[in-house]
Amino acid sequence: MSAVIIDGKAFAAGLRGRVADAVPAFVAATGRAPGLSVVLVGDDPASHVYVRNKGIATTGAGMVSVEHRLPADVSEAELLALVAALNADNAVDGILVQMPCPKHISEARVIAAVDPAKDVDGFHPVNAGRLASGLPGLVPCTPSGCLMLLQDALGDLSGKEALVIGRSNIVGKPMAALLVAASATVTAAHSRTRDLAAHVARADIVVAAVGVPELVRGDWLKPGACVIDVGMNRIALPDGKTKLVGDVNFAEALETAGWVTPVPGGVGPMTIACLLRNTLLAAHARTG
Ligand code: GUN
Image 1: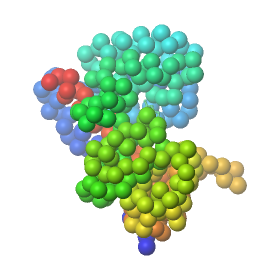
Image 2: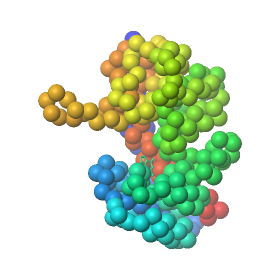
Image 3: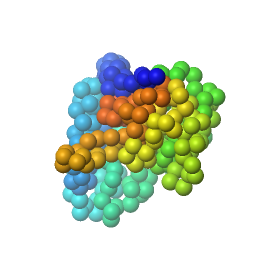
């Protein structure tokens, strides 16, 4: 059996296109384009790449992108003052503070400082609580994108056995909440889970978001399962080069799964497309 390789890049391009198509109506109604402000603290090279790509995608969809770069030694008070200024700026619909922040800054305090109505990351406790309570709100981008890919592959998820591996606030927990809301039967696995392979073997849906290169082996999978790989792990090869791999052994998964996302080109592009969608949703919600 050979799995269908889910083309996240193509799906994300379609979503970005639908967001871009909806922007002119917002401009016509309000006299301004939706605005996303991204705050980057320090000089983590991967974060710089992500932020640049977010900026390009935002302007590509006809929205306003503003980047605020702060030095690694900026005080938490200065960062919180910038967030407060962005909260108060009516031209700003979405605020994203790129994580991770330097160690002397409390990410929890920064997240809590963002106006929940502008929290396009969906990380604010108010939005996390809304998601857990089944109320409308801004939903974290990566799990939103995973859900879209799952529904595109499988249709209705109700009654499916879903396994989420990883319990981060960014992916694992909101992913589990979204799957519960979609009426799947959800198991949340993590570093203390015993016999992960046995859980994988029961799952119609596997979402792997743990950051362990190729942790999930192909022969663990239930035949025909839909496998969504959120992992982005850079590993060293014997020839000194590096390679990006997911949390799932892709070549092995192809043999057993029904559907599998590649790394790169699977979940990654969906995250940015969902960020654009959240920015447009926030802009509409703020302007009534
Ligand atoms: N760092 C890694 N992923 C994300 C994300 O989705 N949002 C933010 N703000 N930082 C991140």
